[in-house]
Amino acid sequence: MKSLLCFLLLSFSVYSQKTTEKIFSTSLNENREITIGLPSNYDKNPTKRYPILILLDSEFLFDPFSGAINYGSYWDNMPETIIVGINQNQKNERHDDCSVNENENEEILTKKGSQFFDFIGRDLIPYIEKKYRVAPFRIIAGLDTTAGFLNFFLFNTNPIFDAFISLSPELANGMENQILNSMSNSKKTIFYYQSISTEDVKFIKEPVLKLDEALSKVTNSNFKYKFDAFENTTHYSLVLYSIPNVLNHIYESYKPISTTEFQQKIVVLQSGFVDYLSKKYALISSILGLKIPIRINDFKAIEAAILKNNAYPELEKLSEIAKKNYPKSMLPDYELGLMYEKMGDSKKAAQKYQQASQKEAIGDLNKDMMFAKYDEMKSLTPKK
Image: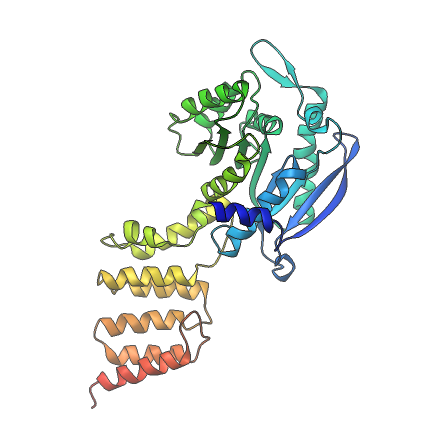
């Protein structure tokens, strides 16, 4: 953890393109400053789409989030993400933006708070989606005052955000019940994260702990919840501990097959190894709205599980998926060649390895390997 925190502190925006722009808000009737962080390869991938992260308190949350996302995406543990920071560094701006009218049992947004709420949904998001290539997955994050404010988006039965990052939130009166009701009845997949420090003040800590107790009992499968209470941290330092935890929580389905996943979930299957792979990537598409080719290492993991369980006919299904993902590569013919080899048909295996040698190399598959496999299978083929 310490090494990750050092990375976040020292290399915030090494990979992303960071620009500041002003947009006019019809809801607020004023210009607002935003900071945009684009993935470093954004211009090199003209058809690729990206999730968006809306950051309140951009002036101090942008860089730590950017550092964590860039680090995670560098190792392909999370997708590259477009970060949109709303700058709130003018005097009392964050408090005015998120201001509420206090009632005995609940709090509602003031006129300025409602206008800022509309700015995000009616002005900012349409602006970003028109100008940039975004996937249909939206995250919003804030700290204390702004963290409490972002929960107002849960009042809608179909929230415009898919993931909520609430860092040490100042919850409005009655907000606990609204969050609990929304999460219990949500028809769409919602990720919800909240964290506190053991050093947080009582008026922050007690409502969050009460809410956590209630949310931990929600059985709705669409509700993806995580809570952290950090010891030996302050109200502000908890941010650097929360960010990697919540991003790994939200993007868990995106990760490549790990050694643990392979050993505990895949190799222990009796059958259906290729179906497992298909479902894994279907989940990425359905939850995150991302359509990505199946990683080569994930193909190899499934191949290894098939071989370990002697489920050789499944290599044909693996070949079919390889053809859809990498039609010009050696991979589809290689998987068929491997199937025939393991099933003892050296003649057909040799044919497939020969065909593979004429295709594009991929991963650790290359022409020399295919020629070697071809020669090996030819030597095992009975001569007429």
